[in-house]
Length: 109
Length: 141
Length: 285
Image 1 (cartoon, chains in turn cyan, orange, blue):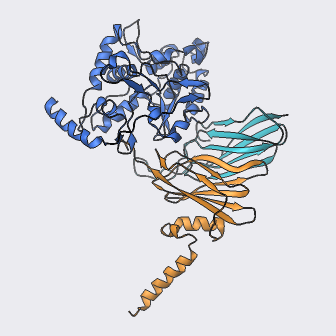
Image 2 (spheres, helix red, strand yellow; image 1 turned 180 degrees about the vertical axis):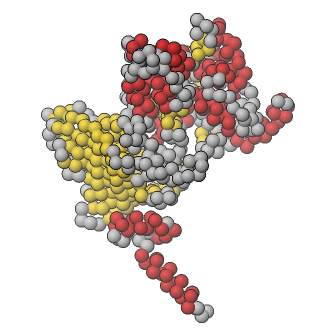
Image 3 (cartoon, chains in turn red, cyan, yellow; image 1 turned 90 degrees about the vertical axis):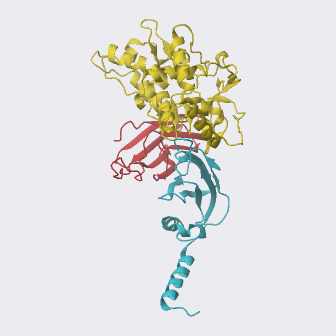
């Protein structure tokens, strides 16, 4: 697992049924592009988060494929519909095979 | 002027290439042609309800905020035409997406065009593009 | 340095630097998280009389897109390092078996106000200390842990966490009494031309703020928002690292991060921002 990778997620605590809520996510990651060289002139191998998904109660909201052109500390903002109370699951997939997940519950009235 | 066999051959290759290239602007950018064709199957994206929001001038190419929005799209892909690898991101929207829109922050190697292409539910493609000027900093660059 | 020659050469370079179009600070106002009002424009402190009328945060010189990233803590990438520092605060390290929280039971919040008055002269030994000094002394003496590298993300995350507790408070560093001699030393440095380009801090940040230096909009060089997250390095930048970068860019042999020279310069530059809000951690290009 890449060192110091830590997700931050911002989801409203509550919403009314069927409401669109705005979600923001940020994860600490170098996103080494594979284009850079070290001081000896050797290419630094690519090491990025290559995929990010957000699901709510098992149903997909957004599925993103990331290329090295996504900035360090990948940030996404998008809107989700919440039909009922439940849990958002956020998953980031690292090139090195590790995954990072975060969950956030929301109360729907 | 009489064409030599070699000249004819070269002209023929050029014409064939021109037919294959979906958008003239990509002609100088071979990887881009391949990447876009992989998405659109060679179809040239039209215009429609798609908006790419990006700054006219970015203070630093390392972090350029962008937003894409294409109501009803199944998928939106973003390309940075002047980057060594043009593909930036592909957004696929699930049943619980409240809008077919997303914001992120991207790297731009230099001043260039950014292209957003959306695949609509009917399988057609639409695109929007923005030129982003990436400035060189002060003393340090 | 031959002063006459320095002035002449420096003048020629400045003529190249300065472009006719003056584009001053914009008119935007900064409110963070919709609740913390930040003073980004204030009457210059008395010691700047005849030099500057008004002082401005560097935030006012940035594009709307860059500015926006500082207006909400969630959008601010510096907060990743601040979050990490908050966890470190609670983590035991070193032979003494202590964490920061072992002594500072009130948590990071107990440092509210400190960021606004640093650097300062410590009464016990008369030393001019900056935030990094205090943190490393806690680590080596009380925790018996290894000191952190000055500009490491771990150190700057902790500096940012502590300064964040004073965000919105007016910068108010003392420049008289025991601080006077350090302040004088810092002021002397501020106006000293360094390097092959023979540029002082003042040449850019006092004489030419608001002008463009190549494609960059020159600010007054205020440090009220440090440590600052820079897109350029995609990490937190310390005050001393910024000083080092500026002096290096004049093509000079620079002072070291954590040197007494930079401590004095930090005090002087901080005092030029007396009256602005502490804005840490800021976001810049």
